[in-house]
Amino acid sequence: MTKPKALATRPLFSQARAILEQYCEVEYWMEPQRIPRTELLERARDKDALVCLLTERVDQELLDAAPRLRIAATVSVGYDNIDVAACTRRRVIATNTPGVLDETTADFAWTLLMAIARRLVEGDSWTRSGTWPGWDLDQLLGADVHGKTLGIVGLGRIGRAVARRARGFDMRVLYFDPLRLSPEIESELRVEFVPLDDLLRQSDFVTLHVPLTPDTRHLISTGAFRKMKPTAYLINTTRGPVVDEAALADALEERRIAGAALDVYEREPEVHPALILRKDVILAPHLGSASIETRTRMAVMAATNVAALVEGRRPANALNPEALGL
Ligand code: GLV
Image 1 (cartoon, rainbow, N blue to C red):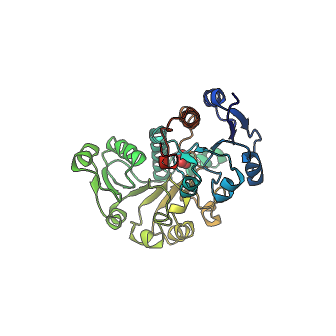
Image 2 (cartoon, rainbow, N blue to C red; image 1 turned 60 degrees about the vertical axis):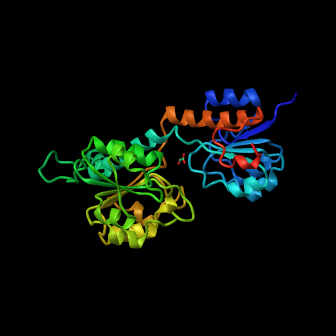
Image 3 (cartoon, rainbow, N blue to C red; image 1 turned 30 degrees about the vertical axis):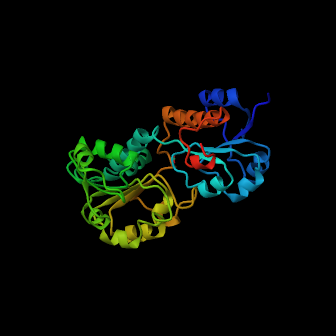
C-alpha cells in the first residue's frame, strides 16, 4: 500500500522525521531560506499532510491549491497562521503543539524581564565597546525585580508558568484573563484577578500571554500605555500584533513607560524603525520556545499528530476534531 504524501516546510529534527517517515512519504523543504509562498502552493498540490511553521499561512488559497490535504500540523502553539474555519469547511484537521513549550517560553519571558530591568544588553554593548571605564557608583542603574508587582495578561499555561517563577522573587502577581480562575487555583498560584485597567495601573512589569485573536489585536495601544506607570516595563513573548508598535514607540519617546523587551513583532521579521534606535528596548528574534529540547518536542508532537490521522485516530492536538466527525 502506498503511503500518504507529506510536505514538511523544514527538515525538522531526526526524532520527528523518524515518526513522519514511518507513516508518510515525506518531501522536505531543505533550503536555508523559508519556503516561498509559490513553492508552498506548488509543493502542497499532491500532498495529504502538511507540517508547517507559524510563518506559513494555511488559508483558503492554500487549501484550494492542495485538494488532497487532510491535515495541517503547525509546529507552534500559536495557530493564528491557520484559518481553522476554512480547514473545517474543507474537512482538513488542523493541529498545534500546546503544553510542551510552556516552561521554556516562561523561562524566556523571565530572561527578558530580568534583562530589561537590569539593562543587561546595554551593559554588554558597553563592555564590548572598550569604552567602559570600570565600576562606578551610578552606572547603568536599573530597577529591582524582587518585591515588585507583576501583571500577567492571559493566565493560560504559559502565563501560569510565569506566575510560578514570580514566587521566587517575592512578587505580588496580578492577572487579567477573560476566564477567571477558581479561588483554589488563584490561591495555589498566589495570583490576584484584577480588571485589565487596574493591572496596567498597578504593575511594575506587564507580561503578555494571550493568543492573537481579533479581540487581542492591539490590546496594548495608546490607551494602555497612558494607564501604565512611567517606571513600568512591557514584556511581549506572545504575538507581535497584540501590541501596537507605533504606540509603543510613542510611549517610550514620551517616557510614559520605562522600557520594553520584545520577542515578537507586528510584521516579522520587520521591526518598527523607531524601536530599533532605542536603548530602552530589547529586541529578541522570536526565541520564546527556542531550546533544543523544546523545539524537538514540538516537532515530534506535530509528526505524531500526522501519524495519528494516518492511522485513522483523532490527533491529540486537533483544533477542529469536528472536521472529521471523530
Ligand atoms: C511560537 O511562537 C509558538 O507559537 O509556538
